[in-house]
Length: 379
Ligand code: SF4
Image (cartoon, rainbow, N blue to C red; front, top):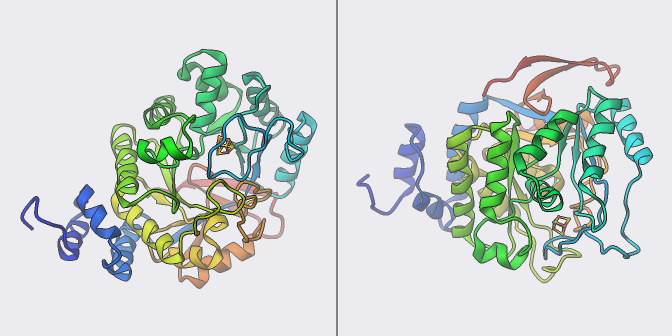
């Protein structure tokens, strides 16, 4: 292909086959509805298998949302509550520890901790949550607080991000989830979450986390008021940071759920848009090892199909998920290990249990509480 000419499927196929990076325009072309989805899927599958073979990863995990009270009012959020809202809750230390005990009893290797930015809770409350859980259950990997929360702690304490992250690491933070990225482009971000940290702040926080040795994930909330340009711009910004740091391990495209949100008039993205976004993410993010099909948001059928459209990870068993169920997700609240393995095997893939940072887990199938970390899973 002559450089600068309009992309075609052939020119993109040539690049994918020769492991060459796709351009911004390639990404836009792939989002055109007339570009055949099955061919995009085939190319994404090539990259997926090149990076992760036939494996599909899962973990045994639980969620913990310590409060839903939040100072912000992101228009896409059905989870938040006002300070005096009857729906509002704040968990006590005893309740938090009880969740830790439940997680350990159920063989979880990971707790995913996120929540609202409570009007009255100091930074120390969030720090203490990590500390008490880690002290009581050191075997549980704590993947906690998004870039938005870290930015809130920065506001509360007036201290640098690096110092805050180091303190969290010192009390037991294991890694960071990828939430709060939404859509970076200000044309969209200023409309859906104007108060939240902007793109450069979110990326700076993840850059600092990577410099401190933390692995983090990254996300994109799609299917609301954004367009293809905003999505490719978002992926491009993640790809640029990953070139610098290499600290992202998994990208999770998050399908917008409109119910009970300020954008309830919008339709949910279709399964075909979900698959297209997964596949394009796999193709554009050539430097991020894993693409996750988060079954809670996609639905089980789409998550299963996603394994042929670039996804190599289905997240986990998940327990106590509130954020997307408040927004109308009709998926179950929990899948068993057998359910997850069946979803993977039916797609012709090999199920591999991993921990949060992609080490293989070996587990006694007769007693889920008996597990150990085995070898690192290179990708
Ligand atoms: S998305 Fe997060 S920051 Fe925004 S309103 Fe909901 S809980 Fe608050």
